[in-house]
Length: 486
Ligand code: SF4
Image (cartoon, rainbow, N blue to C red; front, side, top):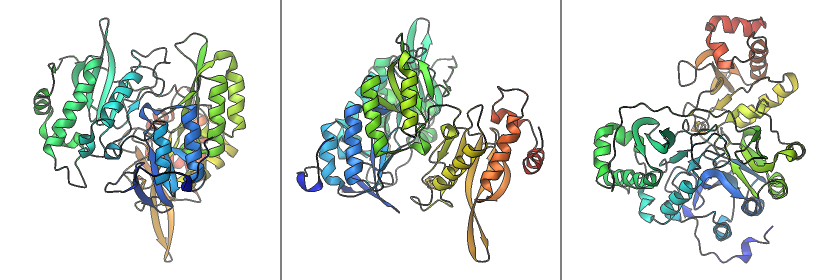
């Protein structure tokens, strides 16, 4: 632990007023519970030393003694005070870049890069190169805070479904590995050599900057700007900044979608070693857990851990024979590792404690639901339950089994918080609405009934989404209220 207090530090770095809408490390973003600080962690990879420094930072400068993993594998500390003084310490462990580009979104990569036995390419060096490029080009400060890049190595834990403006998705052509370029999640059918990816990010960023007014506070999304321009025109103009041709293939490339393998213990590509994915309740860790995790990765791993875009974390490089001991340590920390644990699929946005747009206190309601379900049911398959305070869905952009959208009702001049309940995978974005309003107090019982009826299915491998999609809304409502059998 470093020994530090606000008064002891020279303060060469400055906390700035936030001209933007997203939190950063250098921007004071106010929220209902104080200032939010967000630390970019490129690729989500941290050393145990960095983990301890962050724990100290949250301990000394943070609000409630907790820290959150975000859905971009950043770390977020709420209720920050005196954070100007802490910036220098975070920079000393390479966790604070430069203010001009700090608002740009974290670079995303598969959290199993380099350890996944089925990946096509280890993307970690590409993340490092891009981060160095961004941090050495102040002019990129004109980019929108939504500007985001992901590298997917083609393995079992894909980030292709995450909302990124530019995604490089590894594919194999004959014996060569290329990256398929996706813009705004849409396939371009352009294959790039690994060494060409950084040039393409720079070219698309330059094209974007040429087209916008960089002094505007609200900048357009790169995806939207390029959609309006059209893909072929975008590529034609980007070509001017590239030393190699962008060739659009007639071939349609498969986009990797697998995200099921990051929780629990899994063998690595390195023989005799395993990684273990740890479930965090709504991405939250307390400071004590952080210090203990740092010790755990030093004792059993290689001194590093990885944050995931699903608000969980992974400890890599554990000798496989030590997995039971590590699982025991994780449980002793009050955390979980099973993919079937209720927390493994539970996601909630900030809610009305930190966001004025939220109709409900999503995080508190999600934790209350999890506690109730833990007492009454054990899951035999992972279930994704998504609480969102409004339809923007900041916390999760993929498909959920159950989506709970915050809603309010006025009764006798009193506002009663509740949720609109959606299930299944079709009729996007949330699935089918089965209840337009269930009040917060009744919600746990309704969700329990949903899961109890689902557990009676004949095919144990049928996912909740597949199962629920087979029935009419009226059938589902009937079963869930009377507790019948499907
Ligand atoms: S989803 Fe809506 S309510 Fe939730 S954090 Fe985002 S904007 Fe706020």
